[in-house]
Amino acid sequence: MSLLFEHYNYWVAIFLMMTGFYTVISRGNLVKQVVGLNIFQASVFIFYISLAYVDGGATPIVKEGVEVYANPLPHVLILTAIVVGIATTALGLALIVRIKEAYGTIEEDEIREADQRDGKDSDA
Image (cartoon, rainbow, N blue to C red; front, side):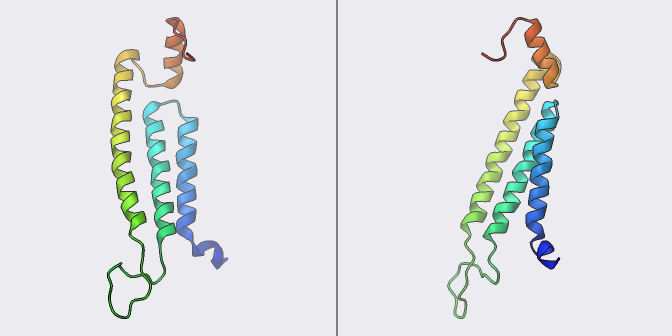
């Protein structure tokens, strides 16, 4: 039983990943889909940082008596991914605003119906 809870951070990452994935595939609201993608993205960050953890690791500064160092590269990559994620979210929300102006709704089904009514082919 302790083995199950020993790595609870992995379970949190899996729960967030499945929550975000479910939100993306089950919702027709575009804003909710963007939020689901952000939840999924946060779970990937948690998972990646959890993998990078070194038990007893010290900061990578050469000191006497320190033999185990933690690699700072995964943390730096996650910081970069956070910045890219924020920019992608901002772009997605800006596109949702434009879609709302053009169609009058942010519901995916209503947008498809409007396209079909207007004779536009959404598969092309």
